[in-house]
Length: 390
Image (tube, rainbow, N blue to C red; front, side):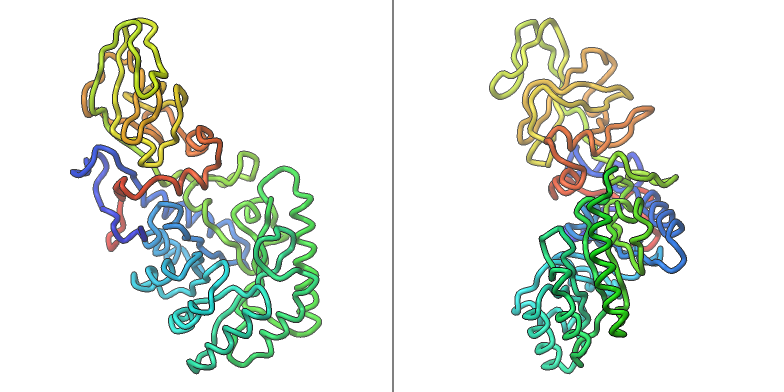
């Protein structure tokens, strides 16, 4: 899903196709981007990372809002994501992260996409394709400063950068790296990476080689490593109102953009000794009342047993039994006023209480990024407080 099938609906509206859905709060998205833009140093811009459908929030919607807030470029991971943004009218430069097969280069160059360079073979292939089309291809040289995923090792970067700078059909749009641990209290390795990146930049300065953008920071680096901001910071998770860790710096005003909701589809009155669900993982200790929710691991909810909670009627209700592909069962004995089709919050706020993405992610022993991207496309995305021109 590239965000083009988002539905626009007022708060409280029930999607007619399912009693389970995701809400994307446009007002919060707008406020988050403006808050981040205002917190940037005067000479630092930001790139909006909208890969994987903007972590499940709708890439087109998020990219348009980022552009309105002054984003310098957009970042995705594959060519299909980039072309979807182009078709949606996004004219900002688009950086395609990761590696590109030679077969992908013609469409990248033709559509003006910025391509990451990791070794000299990339330079040769991209330069040849750009020359064939009579164009100048935009490239960002990725420096491996210690994450050891993509990029040319910092000690070997000079030859690749020199070759890019000396090739007529290439434009050195950026020199970049990526922190492997920027959002923890221990910043020692982050500072080592920064030192390695800085050594490459110092060499470039000595050779009078200029890149349009020097960028190293992800959301965690933007928050906690001001010495590493340079010309550009890459903002993904933070604009969605989710912090990359519990210990990084906070910005006043950021709020989660995504909520996940459903409704009670059935209520069961159990007797002592009754079992619930596959494998009979829950046994009623006494008479109790169970609410059935029409959502499950097929929608991206963690597949847990007798663990977790939801919000119903402004109160928490514990999960009982095992999560099925299409159903979750919760104990609502303490909430006798509930009725069929009452609204339930799986992730988000209801009344004075909140279930955060980190709480849901902990159920699957994972992190917020994983959970946000795990909500499946069969859950309709409904934009509340939508832009006037979506």
